[in-house]
Image (cartoon, rainbow, N blue to C red):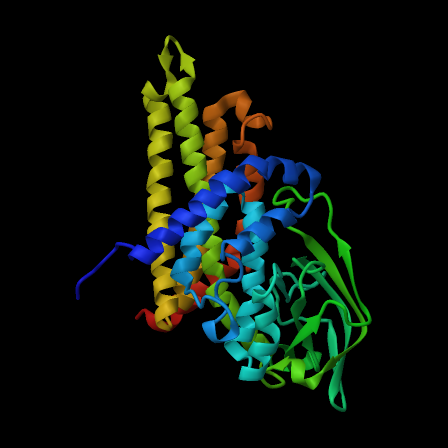
Length: 384
């Protein structure tokens, strides 16, 4: 079988578009929005105008219908500019994916088309204050009453929640059934009983809005349910098997930025009468950063390629990509700070922000410990 690692002409043009937007629009204002802890809606609107918002929505529902390889191309460029900003469209794709996986034709049209007609976002609400990595231990209740459900509970760490047009909420109709007792419901932002509390004081990714989502006697019609009762947990896991890949892509972008900033500084900074890039200690740090970057990028593309082909190997491949790329990126940012010395510790240079931002990539959409559980399960089941 022939291997081809090149991008198509269309993908190259997509990369150029995303890179130009990242460099000219996002990077110059990233620090400002981080310090303000403010959602950069102007950038979201511009991203929509150039066609790079909610790119996975199918053509029949008004979107571009792009695959995960294309999402990876976009994600690396936006992650390079600002992982916080990139989390906004990435989290919207996270909300869209359950509808793509389990929505019927009517639901896809009803929920997805409005996201193509204006700068609008979706969200995904699985986490709760007490369940952490035990995603089946849901407390939010979904009580069936005639032709609707009544939701009560609290969701935590929800990206885009207050800004999203709607959120896919995972709730239990029978806690004793654990993962078999979960239902997935699309909950519109303006429904009575829905409220949000913004989470302040985040270490990084401060431009990305994160909220607690409170549900008090929220009536949701049966027609908003994705799949059948009891299929909610499966839908959530199928979603995360795909959406971990864009997290890896953003991590690749951060690792690339860290390497570029470190190399630039090492060429300019002199010690003992020479640029510090001439010293082997610095060279080895930069070389290790590049080794990590290139391998993380390659595997992230591989995981996306598997997912686009419908190959079930993408389940463990996405876990590997997410864990590996996020750890490579964190290490790269950390080494970039070390190369900058004292200057790397202050906000005059971008490297301290890279470290703060990318730490979250090791945590959300399943901690890297959970990714290792997924990989270990594959080993146990498939390797003699």
